[in-house]
Length: 189
Image (cartoon, rainbow, N blue to C red):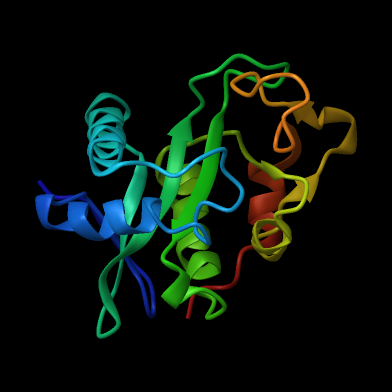
């Protein structure tokens, strides 16, 4: 059965083969990849999508494809992922998003991230979800704060997959636990 979460303006769903060209274009866009060490080739993008699909099969969740009906059949991804690196806060489930630049600044990431939190805490029964971003990625920090996450400055870290001294190595860590999610949840309409 196909996975789908629907919000007022967004849909989180399983990845489709027809998403791959738009995904590769996103990963070749220097603005989208501004806070990542490099651009990805079409082949690297396909491999990343394959890893996300495999994660969904293995775990029952992933960074799902983001669809914005009437705007974009594929606008990027938003969702949940078990981190695949070791750090002082792992193992954990991370919430993340990456959108095509044409979809920035419209609240789509925030709406889809709230759907992801609801699914993570409500359906999956998770106790805590983390988010991480490089220090300069203020747009992502703003989404984290809008969805009720709080920065844990004592937990900021150097990403282990980046070499020492790399300008993107330092990451901020945000967290939200089940009790905080329940306290900030909007009442159902």
